[in-house]
Image (cartoon, rainbow, N blue to C red; front, side, top):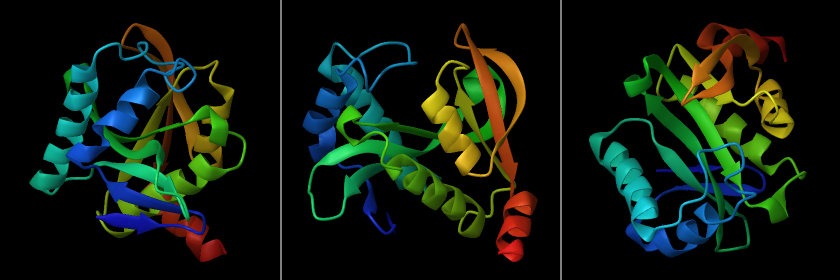
Length: 176
């Protein structure tokens, strides 16, 4: 599976992506507002295997984010599931290498993933789970048409639940 935007190509993950993703997951800035950096390669392998399994099962998954004209992965953007935490909605989650921050790239990726969720998967609603102090990610969610619904505790941390419904997405598209 592949999605394209003006500046990005979003690709399904492959086993060969472990090395570059291990570097990203070891970066404290990349992993800010998470449970911490990945210190062991097996953590990255588990991530890649999980998202590849979602792809094989034919369910919404994560994409590797690559800037057009480059061949290196600069982050990820796509879908996460948190049923084990009592969250039934599918999350649009994203992370970007710090060298690429403040260019609107992850917003571009998140919009493509949101459109894919509603257009291709016909999902009724998607959310983003964001730490209240993570202002850049909050801005991405807002630019993605999401609004704060509530604050919860997720994995032991205060977390804002941003959401958008397919109905809201369709209304915004019709208004253009």
